Amino acid sequence: MFDPVSSKLVGGAHTTPCMVQNAILATLPEPQFELLRPHLRAVPLKRNEILQDALRHPDAAYFIESGVVSRMVRTVKDGLVEVAVVGKFGFVGVSLVLGAAQTVQRSIVRVPGSALRIEAGAFREILHQSPEIREHMLGYVQLLIALNAQIALCNARHDIPERVARWMLLAQDRIGGDRVPVTHGVMAAALGVRRPSVSKALSDFEAKGIIEGRRGAIRIRDIDALRGEACECERILKDRFRLFRDMPHHRRVM
Image 1 (tube, rainbow, N blue to C red):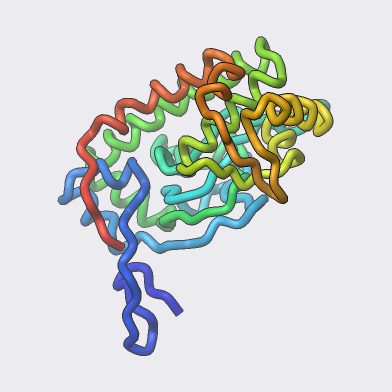
Image 2 (image 1 turned 60 degrees about the vertical axis):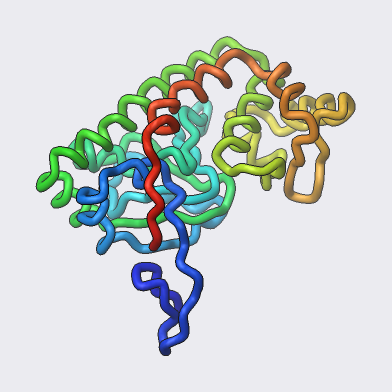
């Protein structure tokens, strides 16, 4: 069994330490990160796992190390629609930073990966103790509000192929590499549209040589061409996170 804090296998054997990939944690000054470190536990993120649900009391925050999480809103008539994509540049647990008793959106894993998890009580206490950490986390909250607004505009005004291209590019940016392990059905659920509409868009991209469909995944063959198919929102959303991209990143081992 793995102990993510000591980077040891129970029984005395050692394993290779893992570098912290999450940008929010990697850009924290060392004294503030050390307040969080003892409470962080590495956990896997499984496809379709609900990390937090709307109108529920959150039991933990998740700093995403790999994979993609969708923040969703819901109506009875329209079902769930994605309003933000969370990856290694963000975390799930905004309500804890804001001091709210309940979450307002569902956070569901779309692309499997991993996260560093901290219990809600410990996170609240650290935020109370350290204004520096709270301010750092609020910087991400501000970006997330802008992200919600931009995706709401995108969902309302842009065609499905543009939105499909935008979603793949944002997912690729958070995953890295050219392979996005996602099915047509998962992407349709994230975008709140019918699966055949997504399949048609992806089929057209594949015919142009932009992507290559594989079992349970999509490989991006020409990322510049894919950007040409996406709406302006892709560039705007990526630029929003330049704040954390441009901050000094510290090499941290868990």
